[in-house]
Length: 351
Image 1: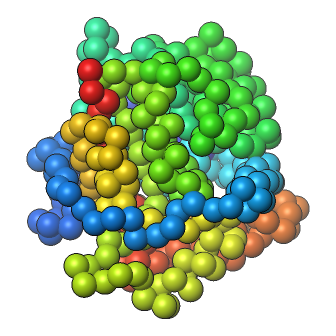
Image 2: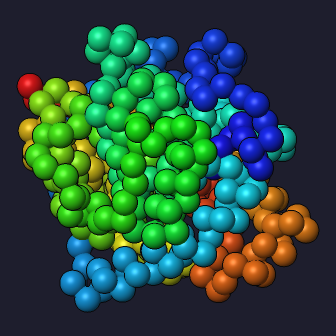
């Protein structure tokens, strides 16, 4: 979804320095959230063992992969038509309201990319900036094209959806980027790349679909070159308290309904991801809870679905897309109740 681009009618720069055109970022002082570049991110400590069984059987995994591919085959065209190239949340100041123009929300999606790069301290110095990037769960290639343009890098995107891969390729051709970006259908748990190929490993809201989080993180680390930065932005459930062994019953049921609609496996927490990264001896592991910064996004998506254009598009799309639209209020409620967390997790592979 291109936050600054719809129907290819807006003439906008391919990338922008968000810090030059956004108001100062104010973050809460709560210890549950670390700050972004302005104050420096929080380094994590040792965490408990995994709180969920994040793996599934082989047959279940195949069903899940098929469902994910079909969901995005159905829905990506509708999303692009309304929201543009970037199939991820926007990043807002905490005081932002859910109301706002589509252009405002699309700009917030670009800001999400910039904030993630800033949080991970990805250098913009041409001598140190990324040269080879993998976009894991690339959608229709919005992040790939943005990163390739911003850094002059080569970027390879993978997705389970043939429709997304074809559309991403077509958009790259339209934008004159065929020599910089490429896309293919591939499984993030078995990436078709050699070891240590990429100096930036990018996963923007794809981790929630991964049925084996350990293997997912292992693949991110495997394809990362020595010294590479890994950026993982994903939905998580809340961290468990020191006396808790699992989520509450109502929380599990709430997440189950979302899983059924969006073809998600069991959820895990930010602490679970950190534990996995630590087990691979990755360095400079940093996390932040950006839930408050994405709060306006889902209400905006719901409103767009309730327009005449949104409703007619949904009716034409297919059952999977309609089911996904119907559970959007559950995402809003999950964020509001503190069950669902929007997390950024970054780290670096040792030299």
